[in-house]
Image 1: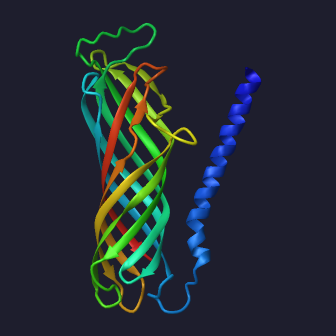
Image 2: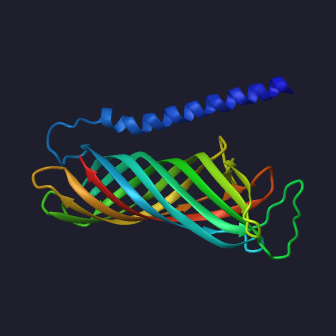
Length: 257
């Protein structure tokens, strides 16, 4: 059994390494596959986008086991390659870091603790997630970036998400005592390939200020992300068993180089 466990651990580590290498290939490929010389707005031109964002999160928790579920303020940072597709459409792919969290009142079951469904919800749970994401998007502008100083646009697509870190604090409302304060093992209700890996949809609106005679720009976006699978939270040593739906509004400020 010990040997089997070691083999599984080695396999999981190798799979994680392969996934990260694949993500890097997806991100770096556009920069090496298209020339940046020539006409600035021609088809195939690659531009580079850097951004930061503030996140307002929304969560749907188990209505019989929790109350007062609230999202904590989050933030994000990203790099994306923007590839001209011709006309007013561009293709975007990149890498994004996202930190979000939530808190709620619920139960707590562990050896030495009672677990009565008396609707007292006497334990406060605070959770923080850190993810790396691979967004894939189509951007459609409503006018010509070359001919206008400002360009409104739509953006949307899908993305892969991987939870690489999570942290939980569980405390008693009645005594104020912290019963758990450590790294957690949060994953998804439904997941494939590896633990903590899933996908999401995203869509939003943007406004871009275009620097004259250049592909450089400053932009603002309001984007919504919706997770395809719910989070699975089991607390401390299976003290809880909750599936939590998440959605996020993100206000983004960025520049295109």
